[in-house]
Image (cartoon, rainbow, N blue to C red; front, side, top):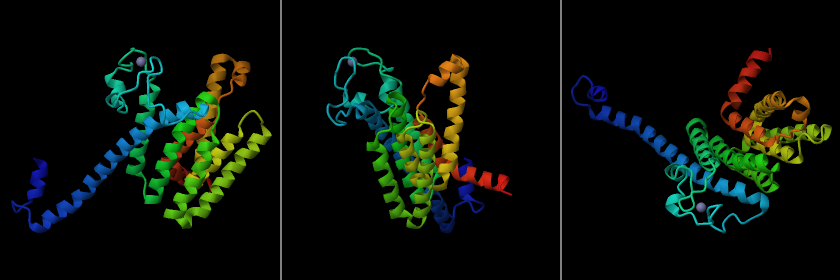
Length: 283
Ligand SMILES: [Zn+2]
């Protein structure tokens, strides 16, 4: 009702000029909704494939064959039971044939990937930042999952990731590429020094991931690593509080998931955090 009233204005009927203005104002909103819906579906479908990558890549199994099947009864998963997030909810997290539990990790990864893709499309601009943000999200998810379970950050993800970052940067924003290259080398170099100084803490996988993060994030890699260290410290202290200091020190926690979380936050908050720091502390 209120909407109609504003459309009609005082003249009762909208003039052709008003009509045109309303249309041109509304078009970007519809376009934006379409883009977000597409990003959500795209993210959920890729998220489903990221689950397959996380399950199979560490043991060098084929990512394509065999097709998705139940881990318990080996029944192939039918297309209508393979819809991201929705199928898991409809089946209440159980295999249709043998009733075995399907880990909640599957819908969580699908939903989180979809949400992050929508957020990148909604909040990032220009095109180079959207492309870098989407590619980074899709690389971070399998890296974090694999490092959590297997304590490795496979070169087969980080190295193509570095090349992809440089390719997107050169294609869409060549002028910004030197900054991203310097950020990558500085971040990789800093973690290399840390890895050499404290062997057993960080690994070479973390060094290559930091290089990749710099190539994607540019200067925002600084808050990404700062957040990762902060989260890692908080979790480390929490483990020591629960299990005692000696046992906590022995509990090796992989650093990759923290780097991934820091990077995911820095995609959105990196530039504001840098601005906050430079305006408040560098005077
Ligand atoms: Zn089954």
